[in-house]
Length: 119
Image (tube, rainbow, N blue to C red):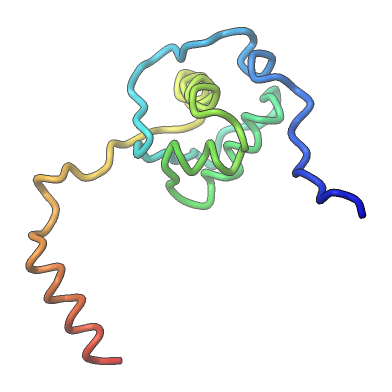
């Protein structure tokens, strides 16, 4: 019996993807920072990873953690790619809503109870 196949990993090492850089040019990315791509920017000249990142984010905002997961790259590598794309004007980022602006837990519980009652 043959052992189950592990999912193949990319053949390119992370330091090659980032051109040997270990740190992004900007330090403004959290795991929950939202990333949105500008659809009118040309994709020519972008690396395959940056092109894939752009394609992912054209469908709507994704968090840094989601982008890293889809690309199957470490978050640190993803942050370097994101900073390059922000610098080139291909993407924009936005911090998530601060917790001070979120509704109270009681209100959320009442909404949840109301939804359950309708089912």
